[in-house]
Image 1 (spheres, helix red, strand yellow):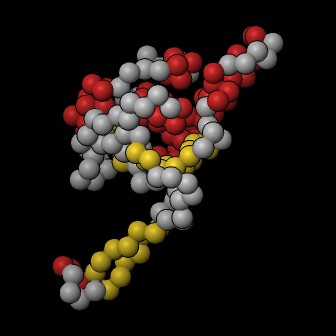
Image 2 (tube, rainbow, N blue to C red):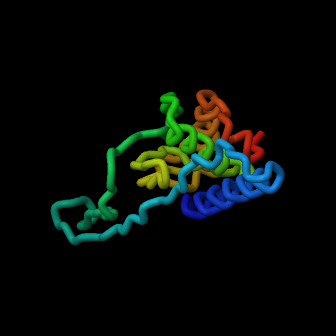
Length: 162
């Protein structure tokens, strides 16, 4: 599900840049520095293990994450307040996912690595009004906690988030 929101977010950023460039005659815009975002795909393996409850254990496997690992927000209201572009992108992405889902879901627990071109997210969590994404989905309480700490930034404003 997070991949759908990532794709939509990247398209919204590109659309906002293109619209600005047409209106301004290609003057520099702060969105020009917003990195593309992506999510690592995790595969989950079910392994027989007689010593585990139910006789199985599970192993999640992802590709190697290049660069320094960073945490930009979590599922309990933490927002990395560092004034860096990757932090701003993560917070705007969480906010965007909520609006894009008609205020029914939000991608949080944004972590991974990145540079000036790309941010690679790993193991995101979704909050949903219906609490349909497992134990860490805190529902509307999690969404409310995000917004209690979130401050809209120039990305939120440039892509038209309320």
